[in-house]
Length: 201
Image (tube, rainbow, N blue to C red; front, side):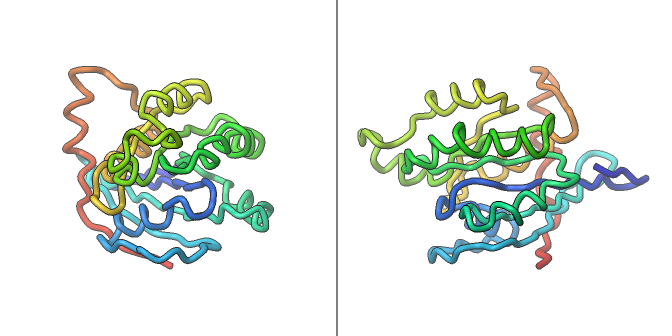
């Protein structure tokens, strides 16, 4: 994290299994475009500028590949990261299992002590089939978030836009080290509304 007189620069790296909606989440948040076709990501970078009181938050978003082929390259992107977003799909139990078995151990090995938030993607698909046995409930995921030491847990949908702004608000709050305090916390929501968004590839 770097700080100037008028801006704070934060680096946020997004990790998780391939095909769970990481890129769709980022693209929808950054430019409002939903990518309905799965195209495996190698590495992409995006920038969101968020207005926060007396300064801007320049949020550098790094989209990483979940495939094991890219393990070595992916870990190189962890340098100087301020916060990690660990994603899984709410309709993919294997991706949820891998949060504890693969992603959290990797982050703790290569960038210990860095804030983590846990994000469940494709909430719209789970909500359409709430009685299916292979979907991940909010309470189950929240419990896992506590166990792995995540600062918060958020669910989102790139299709409906639900929860997207909250994902990156929580990431910014975690990176800045702001702790939840009841009266103050609710007022933060207005501070993290995207003011202008740009894409940098």
